[in-house]
Length: 297
Image (cartoon, rainbow, N blue to C red; front, side, top):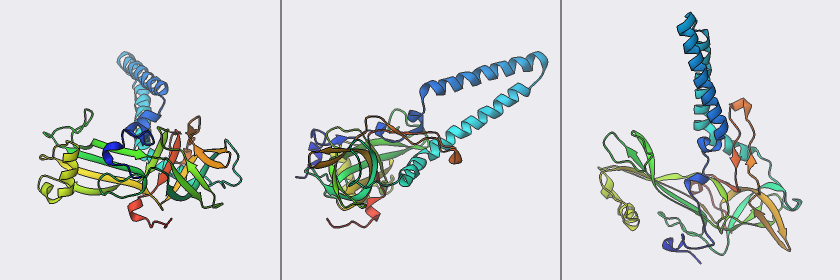
């Protein structure tokens, strides 16, 4: 049974994902530590400024300034490269064999996807029999153009619309050949690392060249005035190769992979100057499915 697009949000078998389910260094970094670092530097700058004014010694102020620049560079590095480091961590994590996996064990399983009872269809390209779909509309904001969202800054791309859904599916383990039910539907906690591809680029000069895109906007009551837009879509379709991280659960004769009770941490990657990241729920990893060969199932 394929779910029509208008019924997805109301179907209890479908998990609707938000932007909070994506990796973000700012959300991942502990807030108490962040505010403590800010307070320390504020106090350091105040003390350095006081010493400079009192005894004309700028050593403390210079040391604090150098340390501040180093911390800002480290935070910027993690913001830009944190997601790639997490993807590399998932890739390096050893694959487990489901046949010998114990009940309650955290495992990473790589294999071929098979749809469950409720397959999805991608929003724009209408790719059938998917287990995960993501369609995102981005807008570029110039000096005098409208923001795509309340936090959209000028001269950057901002997210205007996002549709991301995932359902329960089966994965056939490459190691043992066993098939397990991955419980990602019914509101389960899921962290996806699925590559999106750019479907279409729109600017005021070519906005009428894609009737399908204009129809897609109209179905969602989104305006198509003089905006520079970019539509990205990603999906995991039946036959795709994916990696899944979760907890093994054996229930009678049913082998399942369910969300872990506690987040999985990547640990510090000192060689790359990357802070630890928390992976909550079931972790899905799939490269751009539109460029990969699909195995018939």
